[in-house]
Image 1 (cartoon, rainbow, N blue to C red):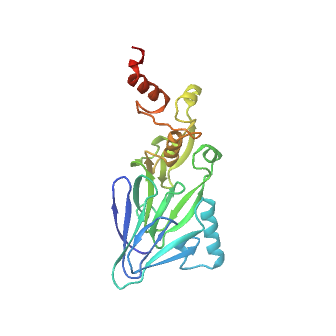
Image 2 (tube, rainbow, N blue to C red):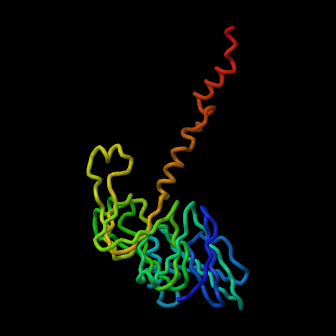
Image 3 (cartoon, rainbow, N blue to C red):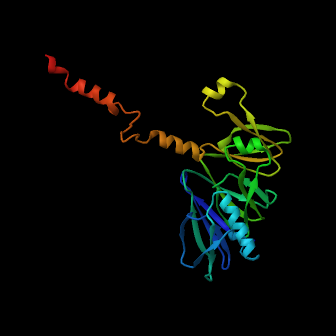
Amino acid sequence: MDVVDYEIKGSEMQFVEVELDPGEAAIGEAGSLMFMEGGIQMDTVFGDGGRQQGGGFMSKLLGAGKRLITGESLFTTVYTNGAARKQRVAFAAPYPGKIIPMDLRQLGGTLICQKDAFLCAARGVSLGIFFQQKLSVGFFGGEGFIMQKLDGDGLAFVHAGGTVVRRELQPGETLLIDTGCVVAFTPNVNFEIQYVGKIKTALFGGEGLFFAKMTGPGTVWLQSLPFSRLASRVFAAAPQMGGSREEGSMLGGLAGGTLLGGLLGGGDDD
C-alpha cells in the first residue's frame, strides 16, 4: 500500500494534487486527470488498477466486470512516479462540490459509496461493488442494488456535490435522508428505505416518496447537491422546443417584450 501526500485546492470546483515519491503510484478514474509532472508514467490497465500487482487474466476480467456493473469504464489509469525525485499528479472534480479524503485504515478498511463517487486513490486500494441486500433499497433507494465499495488500508478520494457533512451515528441513532443525498457510509450502518407516510406529502411535498433510513453505529457522509438534482434543474432551465427561457428577467420572454413595447410605444394613441 503506497502512502501518499496530497493537497486539495479550490473552493467550489476542487482538484486534488497527489505527491508521489519515486516508485509510488496512484490510480485514477478515467477522465479525471487534470495534469501530471514530467516524471509521471501513465498506464491504462484493464479492470481494477489496485489489483494489478497480482492475479491472472481471470482476476483482471472479474475486476473489469465489477466496474462495468457499477457504470464505470472497463479501464483504470495508473500514474507511477518513474523519476528520482518527488512528482505530482492532479485529479479534478467533474462538477461543483467537494473532494473528501478517506483514510480507509481509520474507517475499518471498507467504505460504501454511491456510484461515480470515486475519483482517485493510492495504489493498493481495491475498487469493487456492494450489493444491497434488501429489495426496498434496490427499487427505491435512488442508487439501486449496486454501489461502489472501496477496500484497503490506504487513502482514497471521493467526490460529492455541493457541501458535504459527516455525521457520526451512535448505536440505535437514526437519520432520515433524501435518497440522493447519501454519499458514503461505513458498512456497519444499517441502510433501509422508509415511506414518507402521507399521500399528500408524497404527491405535493416535492421530496419524493421515500427516505433513506440510516441507523447507527457508524459514519455517514451527506451531500447538499446530488448530481441528479443539479441535472434536472439545468434541464428545466434549458431552452425547450427551440424557444428561449429567461427566468427572473423583466425583459425576458413574451410578457417582458409586450411590457417593453407598451412602455416605449405608449404615446402612439395621443
